[in-house]
Image (tube, rainbow, N blue to C red; front, side, top):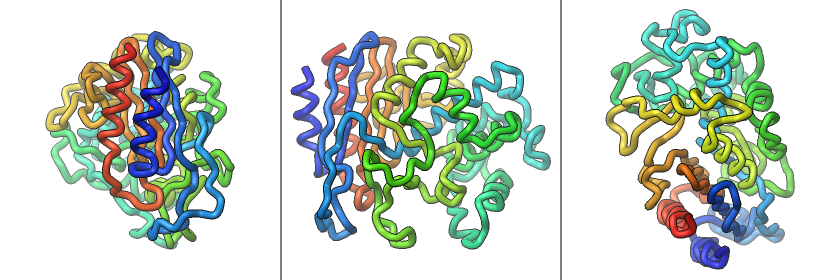
Amino acid sequence: MADRLAEILADAVPRVAPAAVALIAVDGAVVASHAAGELVRYTGTDFTLAAQRPPAGRDSVFDLASISKLFTTAAILSLVEDGVLALDTPVAEWLPGRDPRITLRRLLTHTAGLQPTRRIDLELPDADPATRMAAIVDTPVTGPVGGPYLYTDVGMVTAGRVAEIAAGLPLDELVRARVTAPLGLDDTGYRPGASPRVAATEWKPERGGIVRGDVHDETAYGLGGVAGHAGLFSTADDVLRFGETVRLGGGPILRPATVAEMLRDQGAEGAAFRHGLGVRLGDPAIVGPLTDAFGHSGFTGTSLVVTARTTVVLLTNAVHPIRGRDGIRSLRHAVAAEAARLS
């Protein structure tokens, strides 16, 4: 069964991404897994091959990019369960002066009327992360509040900051305490540094060349490497365990009723998919034939897709050495199709 998955990855590596790891689990058991490619393949944008090209393995660590949003959401929802946060209370309760129409529910469904992103590193090139964070959470509402859907990293950064203030913990410690430690996700965290298991991402001359072990996302990097929208690194097995946890109702990190609300269509209009709390429902970019799936993608070339019986993880570094390479959508669909065949 794994041979077909190997063929899918072999067709995509290194054309789509220099490295890829895929896992497919059905009813909680891994039925197919494969790792292909090299964690560091190029030295720059001219695609010159690196002298040392370590092979990818099942335990390789990838920059999750926006899959981080699911972990942020899980941490926030655990605080809601404890009564520390409330989904429909204005975030001005924790961020005085903010527009009273902004709530956590609207932030988690991208309907708060906030702009998609801010290159805060360029806006405030000499500022420290705390000053940049203050500027991000002070971003004014510029669109309709309550919809239509407008994907916004600014909103998820703000949600993460609310969680920090309410919990009295930095976001990395909060995610560890509420999500990754209870699940035993020892390979999941922020700022892994120069570990030999970490896949390289983009060539960024302003950061000294090929990025490896630091978050790829410029806004998260400008905020110190930890943010509500990006920054987590993980292995395929850890992401699988997280996906399985949500699939099975959330224990031990969330209650089944909370997961049900997370996965409920929240009515955000204007997207190509339905939207839960922090999670996409039936996103055509990643689900392929698994149309009843929930999950999320990441800009670096990652995706998590979960159905009632199946969990599909694809981790790649498709932005190495440059972004905009063709084929990641087709690769995601091919892996999802194989998962559908095995289900």
